[in-house]
Amino acid sequence: MPAHVSISVSGPFPIRIVRKGNLSFRASSTVDEHQSRSVKYDSLRILEWDKLCDSVASFARTSVGRQATKAQLWSLDQTFEDSLRLLDETNAAILMHNHGSFNLDLTAVDLALVESGIKRAQRGLHMESNEAMAILSLLQFVEGLQLNLKAAIREDADWYKRFMPLSGSIMQLVVNRVLVKLIQQVIGEDGSVKDSASPALKKARNQVQILERKLYQLMESLIRNEADDAALLEVSNVDGRWCIRSGADRQTSFKGLLMSSGSGIGSIAEPLIAVPLNDELQQARALVAKVEADVLLMLTEKVQMDLDDIEKIFISLTQLDVINARATYSLSFGGTCPRIFLPDEKEGSLMAESHGSRKKTLNASYPKREWIFYLPNAYHPLLLQQHRKKMQNVGQGLRNATAEIVEKKIQVENVAIKGGKEPDLSSSQLQVSALEHASPVPVDFFIAQKTRVLVITGPNTGGKTICLKTVGLASMMAKSGLHVLSSESAQIPWFDSIFADIGDDQSLSQSLSTFSGHLKQISDIRSQSTGQSLVLLDEVGAGTNPLEGAALGMSILESFAESGSLLTIATTHHGELKALKYRYLNLTA
Image (cartoon, rainbow, N blue to C red; front, side):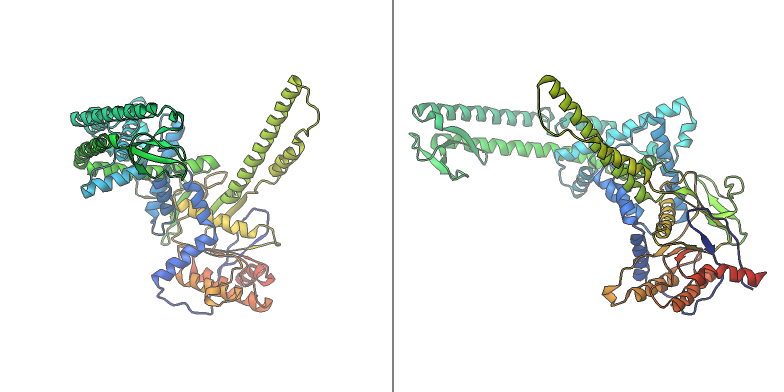
């Protein structure tokens, strides 16, 4: 006898549910791993996960962190425990932000330079001075973070536990104070090697300065001797050699080596009398470069002694930048921490694992136990971001127009200015008002425990596809350690994969029509989905004869309900699919 279940759903559209089924086509039991990952990635791209990843990554403060954020969010190998850990990290970072004593902004640390410095040290090459400076910034950032954490713990010992797992990771990092002081002694704030880093370096640089002064005085003396043409001559420098530039068709009394003028107008000559000093200057500069390299090699050798600790700090701070990006995104858009769980198939109860504890039932911590999917007042994150950006642009336009009016009024008061068009604020004000009334509409999804398939019906442009994407993105956000943009904590099952067939794109590479492309995508999804997957199907059965489409849609939904996924959500216009629930209710009555 077919199973059935009733469900309460709120939202701007009617909803029908069906649970039952067997599909008429067979799927291969073995799926190529590359094809499997391709379908998963394609599904995420259909949901525009890539755009959301870019948005979250923009909150990272370093280029390395932005790349790492995208890599983490695109990872398909996360376990349930990984997702719990990611959420714990995000929550801890948000707590640190709210505490007010912690600086998680890594803007001042150039992680790319740190990485290149580590690689040079690993190969036995001397670091560049800017790389050493970046490593110093890295170590100082960790020192500051540890000091702030210790200060918070002194005030209240419970902060250590509340900030876990970040507090544990931060306190485990080892900073060598001797190395910090050494880099400070050797490298100046401008990133150059200090004169005091080596007696030999100071001596070599002094010699360069002496030679440069001599050459400058020599050049000035030669120019003064050219009494008639002195105003047309100037000191120049070509490849580090001191020369004199003269105007076109001008002859000088001193002998010299003609150099390229570069511009084609006039000429540049190195006076013969200056050649020995220029040669000596080049040698002195080469000596400075060699001594600087020796100093940096000495510094690199010191860094090599602590290379393991520095690498750990680099990895940890890269990860901290990723965590901070997730936390800052969540704070910026007003997200709430979701509750993710694994349905326990044996006992039929919900199970979850929190930081530092074993699995526990959700009876106490999850009051919404009747729902397998609880998503109250949820926004589509990209729509909310787009609306916010439009509001900012229009608001900026309004501020600019207001400032222009104020400026014109000041001008009129000071000087009698007639004519000119005064900026009109009404247009910008109307745009602001229109945007405020056109803000994204949140949706509610409350899906009962035993529901396997949810069918959404409604007119075109009624928001069905947006609802599908909102569910898919919210589920992926929760799995990836992001807060969900809902009015209260969402309760979302942990899905091993999220599959989607949405849109009208034809598969031109495989010479498939729109309808055939959808069938192939659904077939691939059906073969790869598991009892822990989420499947999202837009306009199931569309694109062909209505009767055939309805029959095919029924077969597809029945198959997913029977054994295809943990939860399938589909949209449709077919009346037969809308009434499918009631058929099964009558059969079981």
